[in-house]
Length: 119
Image 1: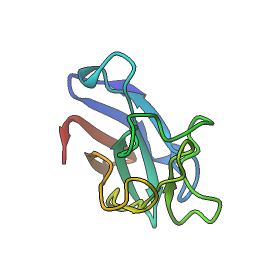
Image 2: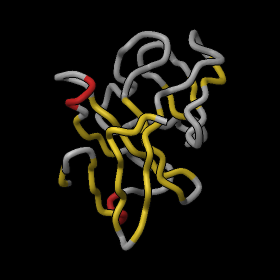
Image 3: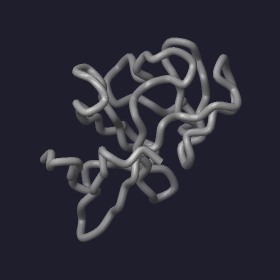
Image 4: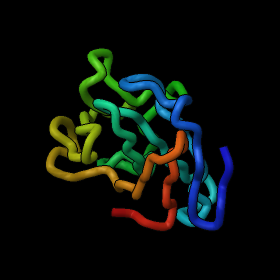
C-alpha cells in the first residue's frame, strides 16, 4: 500500500470479492480514523470506517466487514447492516442513514482511493 497526498493505492489482486476488506489510515479526518475498501460483485467500494449510528469502527476482527452470507457490510458493535454498493443502512439503529463513501477507481491492476473526496 502506498499513500499519496490524498490517495491510497492498493493492488487489485489483494481484494477478493466478498472477502476481507483492506483498511487504510485517514489522517485528514482524525488521528485514529481509518477507511476500508471491499470488493462486491466485482467492483471495489471504499468507505470511512465509522458506523453511521455511533462513530465506532465496523470491524472487530481487522478486515472482516461482510456478513456470513457476504451480502451486507455489518457493524460488529451494533449489528447495523449496510449495502456494500452504496453504504446505505438497511437494518439496525442507523436505518436510513449511510456510511461515508470515498471515491474509488480501479485501473491497471490498482485500486486508487481518493481519501480527500467523501461522496
